[in-house]
Length: 205
Ligand code: GTP
Ligand code: MG
Image 1 (spheres, rainbow, N blue to C red):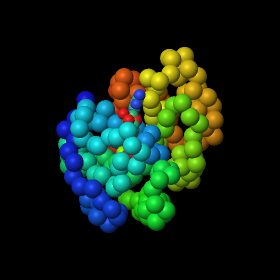
Image 2 (image 1 turned 60 degrees about the vertical axis):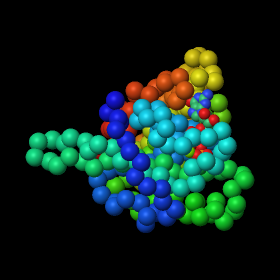
Image 3 (image 1 turned 45 degrees about the horizontal axis):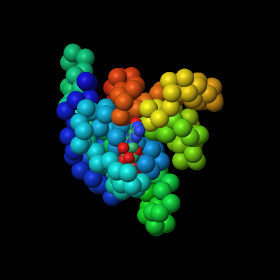
Image 4 (image 1 turned 180 degrees about the horizontal axis):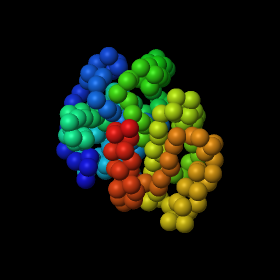
């Protein structure tokens, strides 16, 4: 597993509390309860790394995890790499001030973070994309930021239904959208290898 050895670094309430903006990082984004933290755990192969919960709104901070440095071509120093778990978006019970705070911080993070190489967008395969997901894809389109869309909780559908949902998603992508959609399940392990390779590719971009 190329994402093995991830370690918790810190949880930040503001982007200026994040680790130094050097090296490369990939952010995990998605609506509250979509399964971001579960996906992080599945990809790193570390069950208890990111806290998961049945209650939406579990992750109320930006949580940074470091990975072992990635070897580079000869003569190049190894690349410092991180994964960032972003707070879930769209949970109705979050107080409006906090929701506005995170909207602003996520926006700042996406616009200002120079080490950001790509986004892993996590969405429930059973539901159409929601406003937050669309905003994220629009942002990626506008800024050429690559995105790997994990259509997660695929274990809740039959294989045929999951494949249909994937094909419909791909068809809905406008030409030139720098995004790849795939089927995923943290609990069944579906698509985990594919997603790991995608994350490493993003980090090396
Ligand atoms: P917030 O931190 O609240 O934004 O949520 P999150 O996006 O980090 O979701 P989390 O990983 O905590 O998972 C939310 C719920 O979905 C938990 O009850 C998980 O067990 C469940 N879940 C996550 N991934 C899967 C999956 O692939 N399949 C199934 N069946 N359940 C999943
Ligand atoms: Mg979470």
